[in-house]
Length: 239
Image: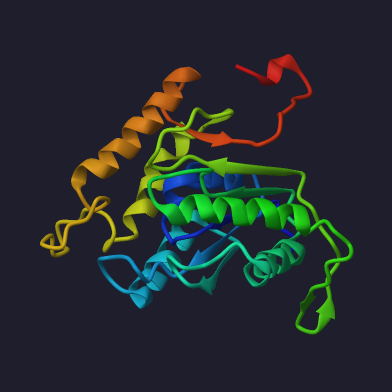
């Protein structure tokens, strides 16, 4: 299956928090979109890797993803080395996306910035013909996506582009709340409260969406950064 957009996210729930409104918007436009989680989030203080797997599947169903996979890298300890790069390169070459979206350049959680660099390097290296990879014993062709974007996470980063996701905000938050062990839920034991399980965390996500939206005259928006300059066909594509 060839995908239009492929999101790499280091933890299950990163894609939901960072770009699920954009995923939903492009799915509604008929695009094929997939998410590949790098780890199972097994170091999370609440729940377990097995529970997180089920929550990720529930979120995928809400988003209508064409693909959701997990590379099962070691949470907290994966590296930007040859073995991990080749895992990501194989997936880029398998699905041949036009656009890749990855974790934030830098963030409170050290995994996020490290994953961002891993994804950035893999996107470039995937286009080199002399890097040989196989899928099910079949040699893969090189592939470099047209565009690499990074969503914005807990730490504020000034976005290079904002996407209006007002129509899809409620469903975006449904996908976030599919992670019942990770975010505030009255049905879950709140004794083991974490930074993201505090009710104020989800309120901050909404506030960020409103702030980004205000900047382009809409109710909610998601922001993205790019390491290269972005271009458009016409000034009338801008607002």
